[in-house]
Image (cartoon, rainbow, N blue to C red; front, side, top):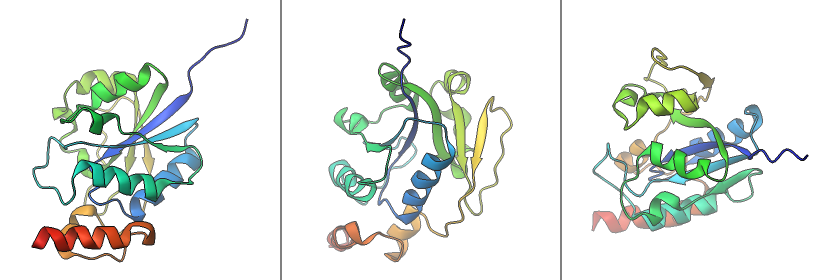
Length: 188
């Protein structure tokens, strides 16, 4: 009898508004150190904890396709954007568990302060391993997490800083012109 186990995956969700070289670094390192068959980059339609957006969901999805194209084991999925509304992380994990075994959820350490407020946090905590990406100024506090791994990334920028300061140094050339145009159009 052949074992028909599902491929094991990590999900890296977020606004990606805009996606930047730090996101690429996270994805590349996660693929190297996590025992997974695939890493799913999952742009959010709307982050329930944010109310300001630089780019519309379709533009952010396009940027993600361009930015992560060619990285082995990495796929960008439009599941949350296709829902045309904010999607809870637990819903996405359950959706992908139909096809895969979702083993890891990659989050920035800046999310730890609100993590217990996430819908079905307890269910998530029971079913996945948190992969916590280090972020300057956001300590890694793992109290209450059942299973976690630390992904050390030393990257000096965030999407918020890029939006606020219009600093495109950390935007990959594949999408830089489009991000610059979106920022310019947003000002007008």
